[in-house]
Amino acid sequence: MVTTIAVTGATGEVGGRAARLLAADGTEGARLRLVVRDSARGERVAVELRGAGAEVEIAVAGYGDRGAAERALEGVDVLFMVSAAESADRLEQHRSFVDAARASGVGHLVYTSFFGAAPDATFTLARDHYATEQYIRESGIAFTFLRDDFYADFLPLLAGEDGVIRGPAGDGRVAAVARADVADAAVAVLRDPAAHAGATYELTGPEALTLAEVAELLTELWGRGPIRYHDETVAEAYASRAVWEAPPWQLDAWVSTYTAIASGELARLTDDVRRLTGRPPRSLRELLTASGRQP
View 1 (cartoon, helix red, strand yellow):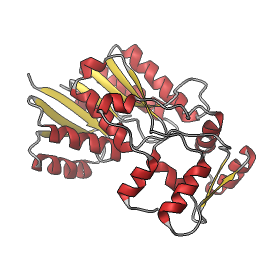
View 2 (cartoon, rainbow, N blue to C red):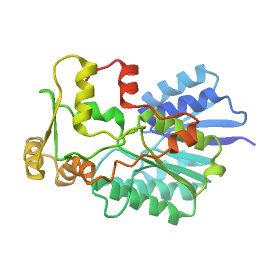
View 3 (cartoon, one colour):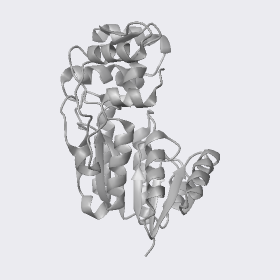
View 4 (cartoon, rainbow, N blue to C red):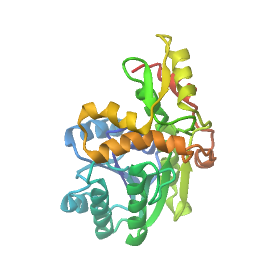
């Protein structure tokens, strides 16, 4: 029996790596379907995967387009749903896509959620992830949740052009996880979804760092002048970001990125990456050294 695995976000980092690993798997009886918003970008990924001998289809649909999503998911057995880009209506988009998955008969849904997702989470966007989890539970579709801590790949981008990381994180710690480890963990689930039905995995890196320690590491590895951390007050954080004239929900998300770290909600380490992939998660040092890139 042919199993169809649909991967969203295949033109991005997490979904793209997951698609490439699944294509390289050579698992007999598995077909990949890339659900993308941009057909041209999706086709470039598909051509690459077909070149490796994989059977790959392309389907075009946005999360909020119920009709297109139903057509894209028709005949899909297992769905890897990478959370949508941050937006004011992301939760509504997620609900629409889950509705489409249910209507199309998707058997198992693997969703990238957020570490500590809860209705009262300090990080405001984690509340939307919790609501999405609940909606998936209520849909009746078999599920697996991957609750990712902040991406370690994102931490270097916190430094401004002046070499300062600004935010009200205090001495709080964050157990940031590499995007590659999230993708690898997802693939472990997608290869045998029934073994992970109903499970929630919390994906973290191997260490919990303060932003001051992140700054020290960047200074060491980049070698282009000191990077430092400035602990803003919450009021200062809102004021320093007002220049971008972002909507209130976006400002709240930006500032709560730091207050969530300060609260200690993102500091706990887990062994779930190792449990799923069979190897330890990448440290920030390993990630930066391997990439050899600077912002």
